[in-house]
Image (cartoon, rainbow, N blue to C red; front, top):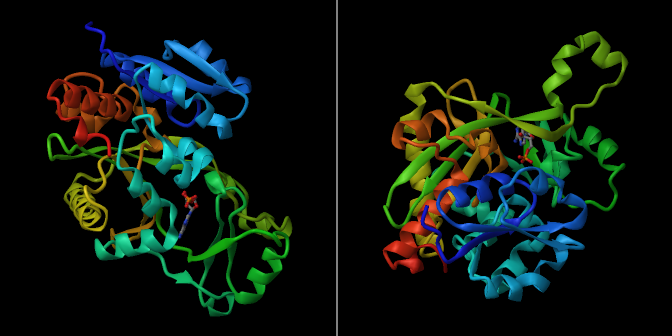
Length: 336
Ligand code: AMP
């Protein structure tokens, strides 16, 4: 395969295996920037042509010059956004795939709500004050990645009892929506102007996903508390009759982002929510970058199989977008 001059780089965590493998499949050389203690998977699986070791992901900017010298393009993912934070990402000089400014909308709860509400996406009610709690709520800690520490409360009293164990945490109180969790993986390319559904997943969460193995009576006597710590991802297909709906809401999210933060959201994104029995998705979060739920589909998903006659992961789709931009001399369509 013809080797491309530019390299694809990301940090070693989250969906790096998928991103780097996809980039290799498209003809790019790859770089994994990795904390010394986390290199094992990137040595075991040969997806990185080069591994740059750093002491802490927080020091990512120290290797930025090195990446620029190697003509690298950085692909953001969940851990990348978490470790660098939206402020440092805005300051990056190394080319970064996607609309950096959209990450500000993703990481700010108020902005996220404005964006999704204007796109007519249903969201769970947010309780500004604990005294307003009038139904089951889920309490989420800011910056708590992977659902760690979340708890449920049914009343103001229960909330105060449980929050006492977390005196210094900032939190959001959200209506607890009863239904099935679904994560919708999309891809939007500014080169083709097309929205694609890449797949769906649900999370495998400890202990929420095994609480049904304990009888209700035992749950009460052992004072079992539900927790939502994400351990892995489970692939999923939806009823085909739901696809028009998921396509429509994905399009609305893109259109609204183009008004709010031109040139808008592009590349991979994910709507994360609960489908209730009336078949409506109540979205509790949007991720404006690749999500780890795409990892079961490194060799393609049932949906990408309809469109591509080759294994097409979201990581590979990103690399394809960049490759197309290079070939068509339209790099402004993948960076900004
Ligand atoms: P998150 O960190 O926001 O992705 O949430 C982690 C998990 O908590 C989700 O996968 C759901 O199982 C659960 N969850 C989050 N928000 C809600 C909600 N508003 N209603 C019901 N379950 C939720």
